[in-house]
Image (cartoon, rainbow, N blue to C red; front, side, top):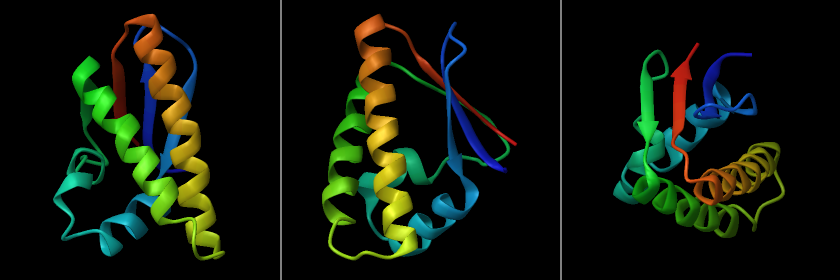
Length: 105
């Protein structure tokens, strides 16, 4: 499945930001600057998040979980599911004091 694969640097555990969910969020939140750190990622490039950015991503996940909790559609369910997993992933990286790297397919 295509998308952006995130990995805790030096670890094997990965999480996929599916291209369909990425595209859905980009369309719905294109005017919302606070989601830029996640939604403006190059789907074919490489990125690295340091501690302060990972903390922002954790808060962003909380916001997405709350915002997309109202409607019970397939897309909203996928956004909530990804955000919940990614938040846990970010907290694990912070606990281990490691960076998160992302690479597109």
